Image (cartoon, rainbow, N blue to C red):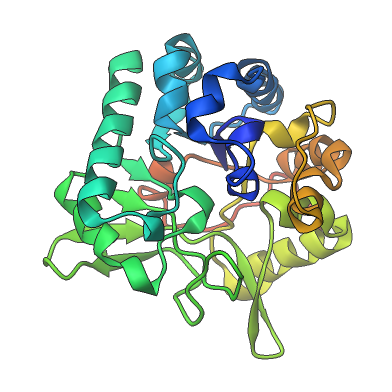
Length: 284
């Protein structure tokens, strides 16, 4: 279970409308929304990996400490939430270092995992994996093996695996969940795909992982996805549909999954080779 800790105005869908220089002027909702996530996970006694945007860690260090104090893993989601393929290697390294510094200074723990904003490690910027390994990261969770207009590595490995970077250094990769259908990888169990697609689809995905794949399901969501009352930002229709559709359904879908399956942090999965384990004997 993983949470990408970013505010509603930071998403790539609104990057053209919301300049990063204007972030301090926006009414932040990330603390209240993340507290809601923490309370939800506490109710089901689930520990998750929280990928923090470094800017948030600098602005709200008490939130980082609270997440850590409740037993969750802290990980890196960049500093400025910029797509990796829009950066030079030097810019990416600097941004990553700034984010790690902010998170580690806030909580006093080592950051070992990274997830790129908008899954933006693509074939054009695989050099980012070398930099992550050089910077001491243990794992990455940025490569989405699907076809998409903003991200994706079609044909990439679909399940957790070991990477060997070009510089020879090791790095684990935890891709988000996909299912194979009609020769295509379909996204599942996270973000807008969890919100918008029918619960029956998500249930089918979990059955596939449990019965056929016998692999781990990497679930992800954002705190703003539990906030249907968030301000509406004027943008093109496609961006608004991606961001705002079915916000009122996220909580019930997460509760469904949390009540039926055991989840762990991503760093915890590195010590567990048993795969997906149902909480109850009842079939989804």
